[in-house]
Length: 300
Image 1: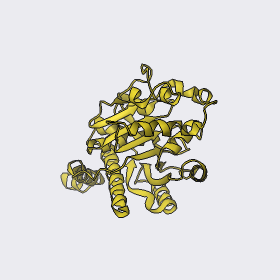
Image 2: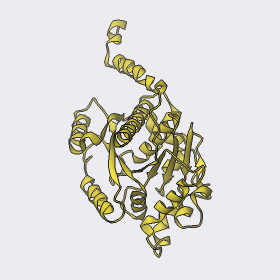
Image 3: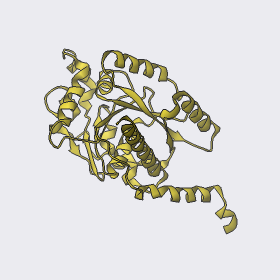
Image 4: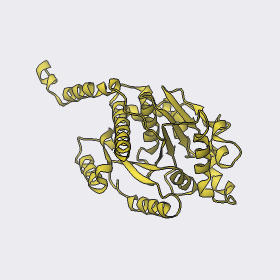
């Protein structure tokens, strides 16, 4: 291929576009929220990029100057690992908060990622949490009470809190939905992307009616997108048709660096900042922050 044809090839155009998009890293940061935005990152369908979305959105916002907390409610502890914590060596974590043995102040630790990014880590003990909490009164509110108490403490203020929970509707997920004010739904651009959405919407309605009337689905993020395939384009169109303006314009591509980063105990934002995956997550976080700022301004 000669230089002329290379300059006009799809790869060259893609690289040129990425170079332009990287400018977002030097753009002025969006306004910080006046009140803590608490997100549960939820999708009952597994393998949609839920944990990956949690840590990379959090890391992106921290790089923008926000103070961010990630609560890892998934017993697998993948969010904790991606933020630089070894869950096998971790002595204190969110399990101790839920059982009432410790407070958030005891277990929250700062991630080695850039910016003010903190984590309440997971542990394998979470596997048996439903048995440990079986006799608890109002056990659906345990996380909400502990988190609200922590956020009121001097030095406990955060701009964003992201709660990563298991892909199931057990007690951990229920605690996350009760503690949060917003739901961020990652949806993969593959077959059956909308599978389980009806069940999730039903669950949200029940939580609204009985446990948390302030909970709303505020953002939907398309993940694992491959613009070269008709399938990804069709799924994206279906999701946008279903959720409308709740779907972020930014989409997350299927990218090798995004998949590699957790094995190095990092988010893709720090693992390969200039990669297409890092740029995409930064764009998504920037858009989420801007939308929130616009909504705050409109409400004031």
